[in-house]
Image (cartoon, rainbow, N blue to C red; front, side, top):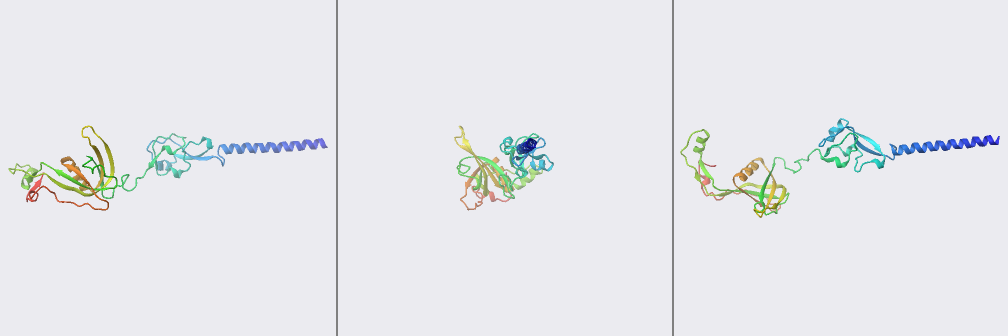
Length: 262
């Protein structure tokens, strides 16, 4: 009876060892392919083009969560849907690809005022001036400036002559030359962006591109002044409001009744 009992004992021990081996194998498989020690990763279920709004992709089920062994996770892979909400893609993503932060651009929704922070009721206009006219290269983003324009070779046209011209009739009224003058285009303007240029061989002066926040009427006057006159920027001290000045250099001619500048 002893030999038979010994055989039964050995068989039972081997069965226990086999069960333990199977358990360890299954546990190891779970660990490497979806068990507790694996890492969740957001994966594309379809091809996603560049510039796609990931909120739209999420809404139609274009992404899913899969688990990978840590060694198989791509660097920068995102692990939650929340990480890609409100984002855009800056490169194409193919179906089955792990979505990484390198494939994500900025927010799909612009902040109030856009990237420049344009105040409500204003619009942004960019002009390029040589450094002296642009505040000597000292103007920075967030500063405030007064904008002036100088005009030369301006003529006054009597109102009756202008009315005849608009109605297609000839007029014997003569235009009248006036002195050069300077006027305020916008007394207080916020600078949204400044781009310093390089010195050119011809001018020996650097151009400065200024992006300004202007009310629509001021923006129109600025465009007209740059096309027909010459612009100058005056940098305002912090917390000092700019003031509009009357046109100077026109003498009393600007106030003559029945005359309009052309």
